[in-house]
Image (cartoon, rainbow, N blue to C red):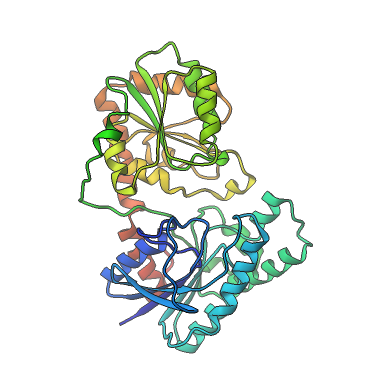
Length: 404
């Protein structure tokens, strides 16, 4: 049996929390006949529950997937030096991991330090080495933190980044427009593979609890945002639109989720008496599709970042499409999945009147027209972003070495 090992110190699971990409890829790769091992760190700022650790390496089976938790130190925040030390430590500990005999190795960023170990293991066992880029480091640190390219940490990371591009059999990117950056840093253009984020389809329908459903306004045209309520999510823009539409009593805005900006935004709603805005606490992932069934339009926005020129692949957009909801896309990036899918409307950032008119235009559409937009998104995500399809594409990359 072919055995794929994925090294990413931020792999989560349904019981531990984000991130889910490799969990879902692993599930679908197992359906294709692979054995899959996921190697993750024991601590991540994204976890909702930490794994139970027994020694330096703890094996655990989750839904048939073999996890190996590498014991690593905690860190204070995602932007702390402790996180960098955590990355170094994780990579160093991998050298002492025994009884590992994979057919193929995938090392996934943002941490770059395991790439040499990944290449060494692939060479030892005669398999392929894939380097997956989810976040472009160290460029992200240079553009977001202000560190100079001459900084010792950036130079070290750049060395590992170039090593990965030059020595991987394939370079897998979640970002559609990142190819030129990879080539500029030593990648052969034939190695590039675009494999975006996706969504796991399920026939299971879990009804939204009544206490949550009762918070959603009835008989109104509802624009909803779901997910983290943070600075990057640019929800002041949505509140600006809500303020401009206060006179439309049949329009409501629902913000579902938690995050560092929630309290401030709630205070703004109270101060400005935005009676058309409702906040609902975060819900379990299994209820998300049931929640989205009760809204008319889904909203996504991100504050502008220079890095977005390479494209973005937010999981949220695929959840919206899977729920067959028209989408308002307020993101300035190198790609526009809403336009590609024909499933909604795109607006510029900071253009409140344009966002207002977009909402009113969607509200004026018939139910059949809204349903058509929703179906466009569903068909698009089914064709290009199901984890089943993504796993099949990854299988072709590994086994056939074809360009896909």
